[in-house]
Figure 1: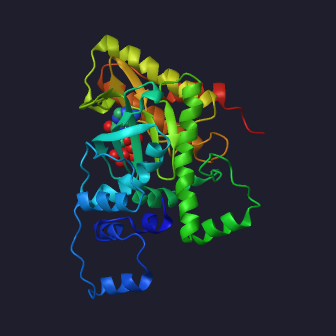
Figure 2: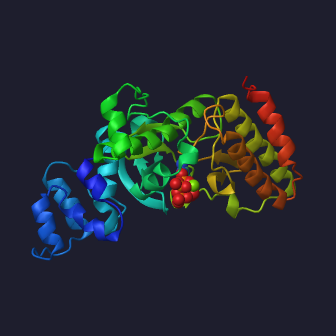
Figure 3: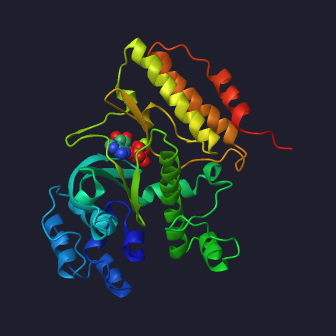
Length: 322
Ligand SMILES: Nc1ncnc2c1ncn2[C@@H]1O[C@H](COP(=O)(O)OP(=O)(O)OP(=O)(O)O)[C@@H](O)[C@H]1O
Ligand SMILES: [Mg+2]
């Protein structure tokens, strides 16, 4: 991801800049004043332009036809996965959210699966996250290889403090890498989360849950039979417990971030995880996760006691601080 197009991408008025990611400032100002007329580009033009300068993600047309607004951002975000030989096509948009868009991709045979989900982060999400000091407290900065940036790295620390272009980019990548490295750890531990395959500056690749044109619905959309509800409640609690045992609180857990497929659950969406001992609000955030999960299962006829449950798990896994 080049910084110029990254920073230019935001809301609708910024999308046009995708067509000319390398234009200089003077030209940009002129354009803003309306002194240069450029016809609007179609998504096909944008993709063709990307191909022309040798930066194309794929030599054949994509199955999914992105809108003009999303084309360049999408291609730049997913190009590393084409380059690494992990995906060969983008097949469909699963969901375009306010914080991230998820696409279903054709996986390369070397991956051993046929489909993969690509989560592409929107810059707007990063801006909201950056301002969310409740989550940020106690978090180190992660590089795009998942390494912690040393506090003594003054160049990076100063850039983040000043919110310079470079600093913002580092902070964005850090949020993404929290999600990615968390998925790695939890998947490795056998918890019910998508397997992460690869991460890039602005996107990550993971197990796709569902069928091609039938993505797994979120649990919030499902009405469960009583027996199944009880079993799935235990499954969620086992996952929350497994996470806490590894020092992870989801931080935004609810039936909206759990997928339901084939009678089983997959917990998703981890960028805002909180560490129990690194954040003053961790207990409150943990209780809220438990409460939201219990709310859904209560509606499905399961009897729950969120306070007792949260207290029991916390006492078991979070040692008292002296
Ligand atoms: N691995 C996956 N397999 C299938 N669908 C997925 C997968 N990951 C995410 N999705 C779908 O994409 C949606 C958005 O993903 P996610 O919850 O990770 O992002 P988000 O930041 O919460 O976005 P939003 O603001 O839209 O909720 C999910 O609600 C789900 O429908
Ligand atoms: Mg979500």
